[in-house]
Length: 60
Image (cartoon, rainbow, N blue to C red; front, side):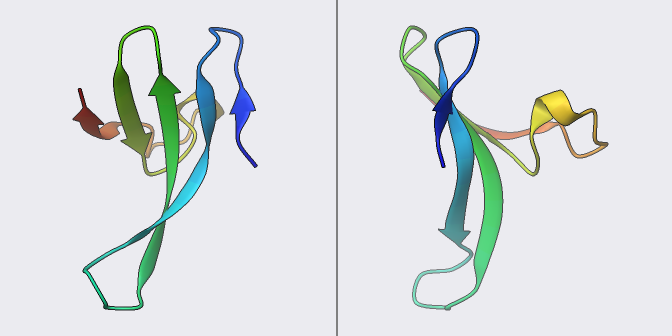
């Protein structure tokens, strides 16, 4: 379930289809920053301290 973090960004997990019509989905953590007008996603929550906290992609 998405939530608003302390920096007023919308955060949560998304299931993204790996390849169109493949039926295989990857669970990714996203941050929608409306002030910076960008969508970031990660393999896991970057605030969890997990080794997968590196950003995967950014959509400006």
